[in-house]
Image (cartoon, rainbow, N blue to C red):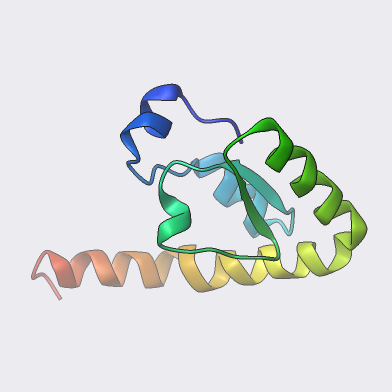
Length: 97
């Protein structure tokens, strides 16, 4: 995932919904760092890059053990992005649950 420059420079923590779909389908994601890495720094399934060299290393890392990264990707989706968990946290923060 390559992010728009405003997300990278702004360090907003933006993360693509398309990347979440890839994770949910068991596809590893190599994502440009937008500040999310400071919150979650996964080593399997979801990897980050800030420069071309890191992107190349990330591809090699994923390809070295694709099955491990695929399994980890699905686990990340279930742990961090599963709708019941996300919506429950949102409703609590809004004081509606």
